[in-house]
Image 1 (cartoon, rainbow, N blue to C red):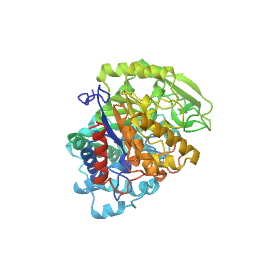
Image 2 (image 1 turned 90 degrees about the horizontal axis):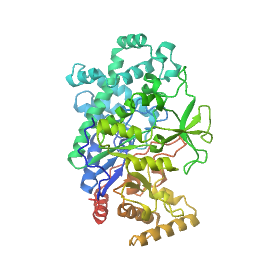
Image 3 (image 1 turned 180 degrees about the horizontal axis):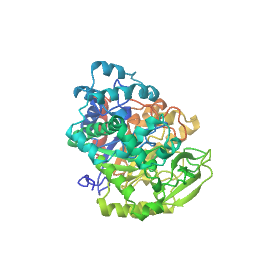
Image 4 (image 1 turned 90 degrees about the vertical axis):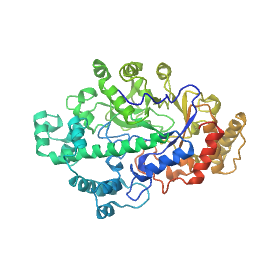
Length: 509
């Protein structure tokens, strides 16, 4: 059973709180990507001083090809890149010379360079680690990450290729072959287990520190797992693959606000009929893992649990596909029976049909409202006047442009129209605000965000700092510059003071 049932539901009656969205990768340090080290602790302090109750993250999983946190080699893994090297230095596992080898420029994340530099340093740290450490031995014996460690060990044998390209006995997880190989390659196998052991040791320390200061974590479950993963390799029966383990249909969404040709994600689809036979045991275990790791969990692409979009595997776009039924509320009803109340946020963006609305009504999970969708015309659900308490409001998500970036790319006529609609919303909420500059308009969105009736209002760090398009985290259906945004420095005391002033003004502390 998850350990966070003592935390009040995020959408309890009369709750009004605030959050900031900042992924671990975006924290500043000298090692090329954010980590679970000093900057994370300092940011938790910043949130606590500012009166912010929730720190929202993207998935913490180990990323695969494309570096997306929504494509992982294992659904419940921790990203080894987030292991803090300075903490390893304090443990005596790294030297100053080792740290120097891992130093990188303080700009956006360079994943190719990071891969080249980081793993050798982590292997050096592991070479100095005491394998007989009791906590590590208990971790190994638990078997929780054994499939992950097997997968990564065998991937190294086949030059990091996907399991579909492995030799037959390895591809089809022939146990005598796999177990024999792992026995002969124990050091490699234990290295991957040590990475997960170290990640979660550092994570649990950070979480305890933040929780003690009144800051709680919102984690993120991607609906789908990656094809190139320990999940599909180890449990192909849970997914829609053929006898050769090839996908016949893949996941995505049809054309929408973000893309005229839809989004072709390429993930394997679940065999929900098979999963139903054992009461959705794998999915309920996944929810339990997430709710134990985090305080609140956002379920990405929630609508896919009502109906999901299946695209032929050889498609180049998501224009052609078919809708299929998912598990609907049955999954969550069974999960509640086993785990208790689930502190869940439903990512319900996109086209919502009656089935999704019924699923939201049945579960009573708060959905999401995006202010950047509100002001382009029409009486839509994202306008502040239409936002209700049982919802989480954002200026934008990791898939949106920043507020300033969004405003800057509008034509003069579009910008004038959007500003007029924002002005009308301010007036209807009895708020006064200057809209002369891009930053002033973005600031007005902050006031609308925190004033609205949502139980929780979350601001991406980029919008809190009025950053432009260069700070965008992800552009759906592209893969050139995504997931690379990093802060050059943590927000200063003036940002903390202003944020606290806003939260006090709108009764979110």
